[in-house]
Length: 495
Ligand SMILES: Cc1cc2nc3c(=O)[nH]c(=O)nc-3n(C[C@H](O)[C@H](O)[C@H](O)COP(=O)(O)OP(=O)(O)OC[C@H]3O[C@@H](n4cnc5c(N)ncnc54)[C@H](O)[C@@H]3O)c2cc1C
Image 1 (cartoon, rainbow, N blue to C red):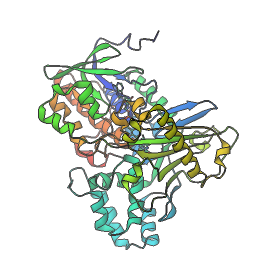
Image 2: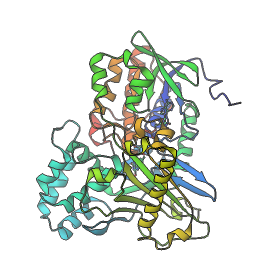
Image 3: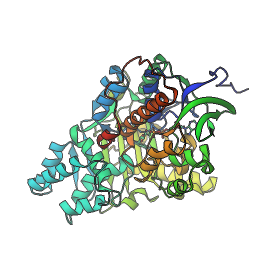
Image 4: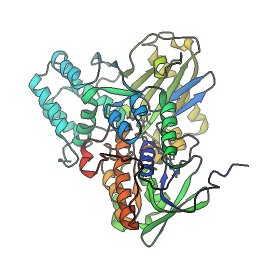
């Protein structure tokens, strides 16, 4: 018989957090530190959401989304998690690009990009500086009408090669396109350009283990294999949740499930105002992803070929082609033994953006066939960088939008939340139902590791204010989450 994961929950919690993605984990930790009673419910058996890992026979460990994030994670982890977690964050030294327009290696920071764009691509230094300054100055409250494509056209007209260098990695990081608001690009790009690309040394398994220990030490009640199917409301306020069939009363809910799922499935449209439902219904989801996980046999090794390799055979950068099932672009993340110090293992993960519709309605036979094709074409592409790699591999498998949908419950396997308009809906949820909050990938700028961690903090601050205002009880902070961000700091939070 299945163990009842919720047998001994308390009769009431100040806050229930639904989902243990990085935003849910961070919000729960913040509120636990504030002295609130917090229950964290995760439907999967592992915590972390997309920031998770899995093991396979032969000693393989594969990370899903440990590919690179901005240096801002160090500060956020030190403030809102622990020094130990922050100290594990290290820089990736070599980011490579290989496409028909250029082949180059970079540390992916402002100095190196300035060098490349001026010397290699021949753009005037003053133009490059103005572009960086403009991107850096962008914030949430700026003009939202200019698109990223228009921003590039203003600074680099007709230079599809420069656009590719500037845009391709960001599209991989958050699914954004040239048609999305330029501010989403400016914020995310500038965060990366500040100091380069970073990774968590020790792997996602260590990260989540350390986060779980910190949550527990802050009194957060953490339960996995606990799926919430309903957020309960009464008199315009949240009253509790139903998880694994059990009703758990609480004063506030933070949903880390997809924004649309939260509104339409967990709460139900009938509980919101008509205008809000219409606006929420119009929010566009971001795309999904495919990945191929390749494990090098124990005892085998591969030469250093760079850490992150953006490859493409497409003539120019093209957002639609990047998601197409006929894959032309892939990012290879190469994990050497120093990813997990003490290990002697190597792994490679190929990531591509993908459209859910291309995979959703296939028969089982077609699905298996198309996955095998994805694996085969990925191996063929990787052979360019690691000749004879097939002989060194003893495990290969693929994930598709269906896989992401299954393991996270996200509608249409959306791996990067929603487009920009989702942010306003996420932020105004509590105006609709008292005590109902959403956090997690949304609006492009709140996506990625840094964006979701920081959005978790922003929302937790609001929850804390709500609880304080409604109960009138000041909480005793176990540890002051000093400097916790408030709305005004929205502009520089994402990855
Ligand atoms: C292939 C890929 C590569 C990526 N690469 C990078 C990268 O290099 N750098 C970077 O910064 N970001 C990257 N990202 C994005 C980053 O991983 C995500 O933006 C971030 O981890 C999402 O966190 P989140 O808080 O939104 O929650 P999610 O990770 O989406 O987790 C939500 C959690 O809620 C749980 N849940 C949902 N519904 C329920 C329910 N009803 N009851 C209980 N639990 C529920 C889910 O099971 C899940 O655990 C990548 C993502 C993908 C898919």
